[in-house]
Length: 318
Image 1 (tube, helix red, strand yellow):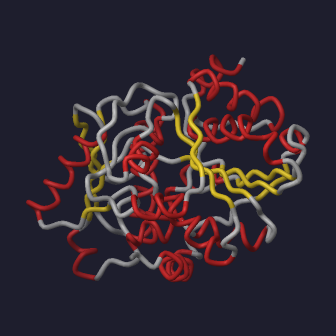
Image 2 (cartoon, helix red, strand yellow):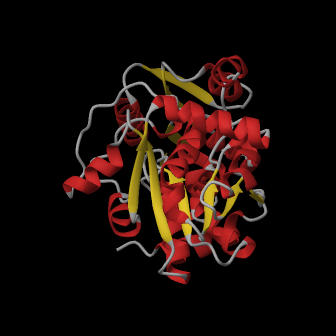
């Protein structure tokens, strides 16, 4: 079994000088609904606009000198690719990033600002990942998974280190779930300190790969539809190491509709002046569904990203 607590501690030492300590701020508008103490962990203010930079730096700083010289390959729907590109440029490592052809324009435009090679691949996220993995294998180049990697999980888990330092009495944690790296790392760290903390996995109804797999007791293929939460969209690698911790550490799952995602995004904008992408809207929407059950507790919601096209955001929330 993966020792997540140790991986997080080691990642914390490697990446602290490269990542931002993001704010944990009160959310009085959400607190009033439960009523409870609700806080927003603003990973939307992280470098590149998402939490993914933590895992990218964790994996890249663990490479050997020989591996650094070879460069790396990764696949991404956008945020992981941005994070890897940023980290590669900071560390002076070459790399190639595989993206789906339908990557959101704002994320693609941002990626083009970095000195990395980009390959656009048709098909869904799993096909893009498989293509990238095969390319890396053929070229004998390290592949950096968005989630299926112990070092990446450890890096994402440094969110938990900061949460513990910022607010020790968190009772409940809401986290968006795609491949499961962030929730595995963060929950694995926090539950080692406080086994009683309740961890809620939040997904769009149009992409529930992890919760359906947990329900089935194995990783399964599920039908994936278009979703505003592109950062969590897609299937899971057949032998992903995130499945076990998601099965063991996530206490409950909440899925939300596309309309509810928009409502979550609008809530953050109207009440907190926050511009966030769909995956963060998923978390707020999930909280709104469970708010009454949390009366008297302290909840933290991870605002995982801010990379959304300005015109699309404006059309959705105004």
